[in-house]
Length: 162
Image (tube, rainbow, N blue to C red; front, side, top):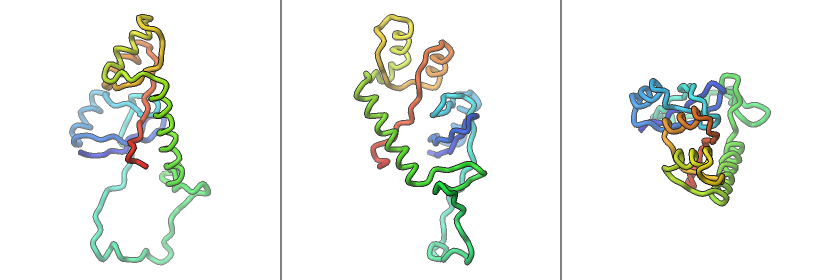
């Protein structure tokens, strides 16, 4: 498995796991990827720092004299003139996503993999309108969007991300 940092045309960044780089390439070519924030299908890999193992001597070495971390006033770091959330901001965002998840689970019906089918029934008046949540494939999501059926993709935070 490989974790990629992705960015959409609206500059939203998010992570996604793929079986391997070929799986990413295949999904990107078939336009099966969509932004986890706004749903746009114009998604590409974002710049990522490589994961490089340090030698034992490098792990214990002190930073070069005069080396400083470039931090902004908000506490985040600057990367290509874009703001990156500081750890406390990221923790707050994760908590907000947990709160949203709890509210959705409390007030909506879980329909699992039947999400697209149930969303269509509600949209076309076959079922009384009510809140639902569940899963859909990228293809099902694209079809719902093409049909003008409004829905949102929410990046659930795992409970282990405390």
